[in-house]
Amino acid sequence: MAFSSLVFHYIETYEGICKKVHDCLKPGAFVFSVEHPIFTSRNEQDWYVDDQGNQLHWPVDNYQIEGLRETIYLSENVVKYHHAISTYMNNLIGAGVSIIAVKEPMPSDELLKSVPEKMKIEGSCF
Image (cartoon, rainbow, N blue to C red; front, top):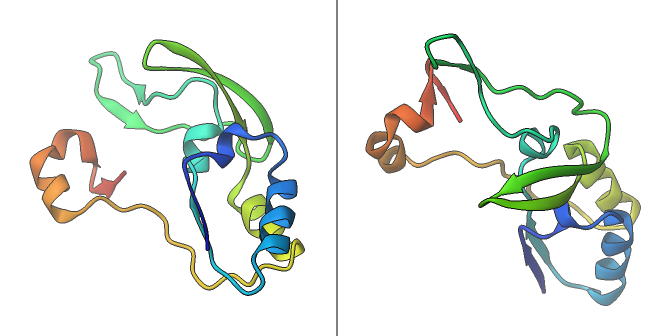
């Protein structure tokens, strides 16, 4: 089994990783997570707000334009590489990996209740 948590959005050549993992795991399982591409699509990672500071929407500008992104995380400059979900899936398929499941994040009911102002915007979970 190969496992990776929150790494591949820091690697420029994701396709090569898929091939290496496939070649090493016969048979085997490859389980990984990445920062969701709606977060890596833009350099600025923040809500659009109105004049009163109310959150309006999360922008996904440049989602289809893949490549290097520079952002700030915990007051540090960070370099990431944006890939669309289709790129993640198609590179796995192209490497010969059989995809069994894809799961996107969803906050638990407990988390939604504990910080509703941060987890719910106009009825949509984020």
